[in-house]
Image 1 (cartoon, helix red, strand yellow):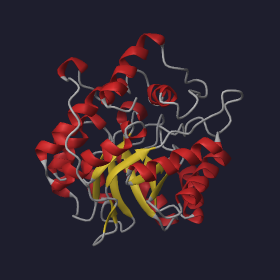
Image 2 (cartoon, one colour):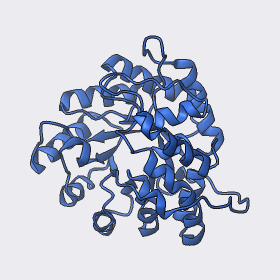
Image 3 (cartoon, helix red, strand yellow):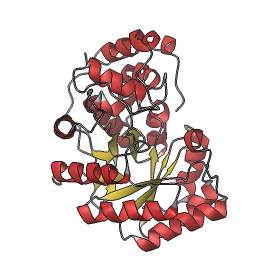
Length: 322
């Protein structure tokens, strides 16, 4: 995720209180919109097992704070280090605890098509609203292979599916023309575009059907993508500043450039600081600094380096969350 230098931004005053509309579901299309948190998976300090009590508290906090939808077990949820059983269990747990209050998107992507199908079927069984399917990582399929991969999942599982493109992590880039071909499938309903490339976002928005959602996966450019016509932000920053992220997304989706900018300037230091090391290292440390979770990750991920603590703490202070 691309960042912006913290030297370009200063903390700004809280804007006047405004009642923002909930943007989670557009009535006419059932499209999920707004601030969609890529939720962390909290773990115990003692043995790095999943901390279910804290996970429930995080779910309730996000609903209360105005988060519009929750992604369970995406990249930020450490999908790479949860085993298949844990992966499915976290999705089921989040769906049950959300209890229909906001949509739940299950991270079910894999670099093996059969595994992605298995996880997507499990998500459907427990009642997830949609699946988020990252491009297959490491094995570097062709565009033809990507098309067939996503078609196979689409054919196998009758659930709304959102493509997820993050080539900086996967070494695999699904190109706009392939996305366009896939957008004709009725249950492939959107894409999380995490390149931070606004020109690519513009190309997608101008080519895909109007009922196909284009989400930002890059907090630093999410406001601009939504002002171009995008539909929301699948966000890391929302983990620590859920209310402000929801408010910023709502203003951007309404086309209010000035108010969205005011909010985003206050969030900008977080957009940078939470990517000083690989996600979710900084965001888990930030949540522990806020007293929300224990800062525990599974190897090969390790705790945030001491040299970054001050910048992350200052970004939290700038956003007014500590």
